[in-house]
Length: 351
Image (cartoon, rainbow, N blue to C red; front, side):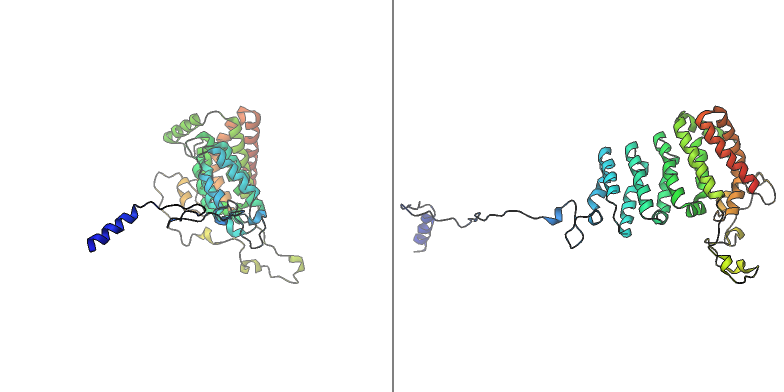
C-alpha cells in the first residue's frame, strides 16, 4: 500500500491542471503581489545635504559637511578645489564642528595642486574671520605642516608656504612667536637659501637649495613680505596690561610686581626648569650675555626682550648680509629687502 501511495503522489506533481473558461489559473505558492503604488520613496539616511535640525530647514548652518569632507581626499584636484570652495561658502555657526573641518583640510597645505592650496588659503582666512581664536587652538598641527612646506622638495609648495604662515601671523601672533619663533626663522633661512653659520657644508646646502628653487622673483617678494610682517608684529608690539591707571585713586610704585602676568610662563627667562647643554670649546661667543646658535634649542621666546636679543645676537648679522645682496638686485625684491633691513636697524636702536 505504501508503494502505491508514493507513486500516486509523484503523479500529481506532473499532472497538468485543466483550465476552465472564465476562471483564472491558481497562483503559485511563491507569488508576490506588486499591485501597490507609491508616489515617492524617501531615503533620508542617503541624503548628501543632511538636515540636522528638527525644523526641516535647509540653512547653511544646518548642512552636514561630512560627505564633502570625505571628498577632500578625492584623486581629482578639481574636485578637491570645489569642495574647499563649497565648505568656505557653508561654514557652520557651531564652533564645535570646526575641529573636524580643520583636521581634514590642514594636510592639504602640502597638496600638489596650486588651485587646491589657493582655495585652502581662502578657507583658512574665512575661518579666522568667522571664528576668532579658533586657529590658535589648532596652531600646533597647522604650523607642523607649514614648516614642512617651507622645506618641501617641490618649489611650488615652498612658494605657497609663507601664505599660510601669514594667516597665523595675522590671527595668532602671540602663541606663534611664543613657541615657534626660532623654528620659523630657521625655516626662513632654508627657504631663502641663506646660511646661518659660515660653514662650507652649510654654504653648499644653501647653493643647492637656491638652484632647485630657481630664480622666482615673485616667490621671493612674497617671502620677504611675510618676513617683514613677522618681524614687525613679533619684535615691535609692546605687551601692555588693560588697566586704566587714571581711574585708580592711588597705586604703589611696586604694584606691577604683584599683578597677575598677561603672558604665560612669565619667568621662562630665568631658566628654572631648563637643562642647558654645556658649551663646547669651539662655540663662538658674542659676549657674556649673548646667545649663540647652539643656545637656540634651549631658549623660550615668550617674552619680547628675549626675542629681540635672539635676533640681534644670532639672526641679524647673516640676515643683514643676505638682505644687502638682494637690495643690489633692485626692483620689487630689493624694495622688500630694504624694508626688512630698516626693521632690523630699528630693532638695534630699540634694543
